[in-house]
Length: 107
Image (cartoon, rainbow, N blue to C red; front, side, top):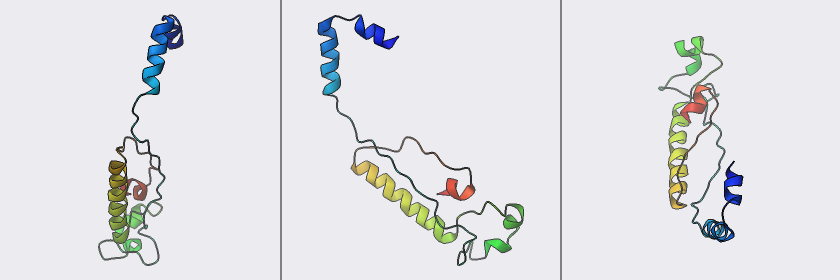
């Protein structure tokens, strides 16, 4: 038990540990939520300069559209912005949680 080990220390040792803990330097911890960029099945969306809804990919995966051409570009911009923001705040991206939908993993 970690707490038991701490309590078994002398009062001076505990005070030293607590003092070091209180003076520790923490890097910024950031949390964000991002929605996927433009879907390929959006009204004005194109994938490789064509309509995804007319593609073989659409026939196989009609409920899981990828990002459109514009969506891919926007996702790149979002990624660069987030990485830049994290770097400016002396932090880094450690964990990304995403939906399994293709457009979400692309973003």
